[in-house]
Amino acid sequence: MTKEIVVVGAGVIGLSTALAICERSKQDSTHVTVIARHFPDDSNYDPEYTSPWAGAHFRPFPSKNPQEWEESKLTRITQKYFRKLAINCPESSVQFIIGEDSLEDPDKYYQDLAKGYTEDIEDFEILPAEIANTRGAKLATRYKTWVLNPPIYLNYILRRLRLEYGVDFVKSPVLSNLKQVFEVTNVKPSVVINCTGNGLQYDGGLDPESFPIRGQTVLVRPPLPLADGPYHARTITHQSKDGKWTFCITRPFCGGTIIGGTKQVNDLYNKPRESDTKEVLDRAAKIFPELMKTDKDGKKYFDVFQTNVGFRPARNGGFRLERENHGSHKIIHAYGAGGMGYELSYGVGTKVHELLVEALNESSRL
Image 1 (tube, rainbow, N blue to C red):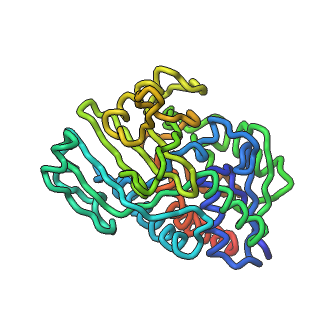
Image 2 (image 1 turned 180 degrees about the horizontal axis):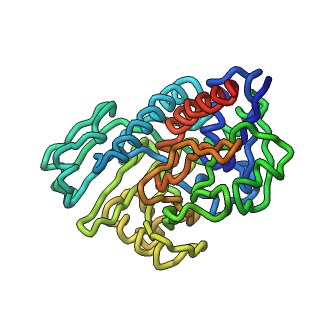
């Protein structure tokens, strides 16, 4: 008998979870439905639909606690999966390129190369002090990493789910609680997988440990020819002494270059702020001057195509990945990725599938 599985949420975590379930399940044993307010093929993206706005690259970092160490393991599962996509499915937009970090005042975890930082990271190296010094940094590293073009990647997963695996997609209004998924929808799910970002709860409301982090980035047209620039096929991240991160990310498939960014906790302003844009570009002008063009008067400027605003769904205590039962209603929670949605995505999906198998096996024994 086919088991009905409902995934709530169609961000990168929800879609990747649905894909991992489909790839790992016998098609005649489970059927997946994705319920969400927003989908990758929407004509316009809402700032609350964070995944299309993401920078979407992998920057490893040292783990400061057991939760971060566990999450780092999930990023490696995703990395391994992305390596296959980069080779076999270039239409996914996933590419592996050079990543570089420079930190003006690295903490002890970076200086000690604490666990979670270098494990299974291809070609990781500490750059010579003279290179770090030219960037005003005490520590500079280089490694092989992945990037992707978020709208292209999300629609790639969407197409695969629809056309390869027969997944149904249901556009829903705002759900006030997870109980509605069991009681209101036409689908009678065996298990509901909660990928709602900020953690919609069974009886209503959001996880009280969840909170938004507003991010504002700028998409620029880099100078031509691209192949001659120092940031071609490269992502650069710089942390200044005040803790602010400035980055540039080359987006595959002629997607321009993302420059960022901001990290504003509990800020719900959903439109671009000129002051934020100016601050980000002022920082970037000092660190990435080669991404600027020159006008007819010889003045340097960033050729801004678009300013992006999105809300990272963060959570105190880190990502929630666990089962919960309410009578006969079985839920698997998978939310609270913060700014690590793409990094965790497929790794989370594999772990959700393991929890799903346990839940379905328990049901079959009753």
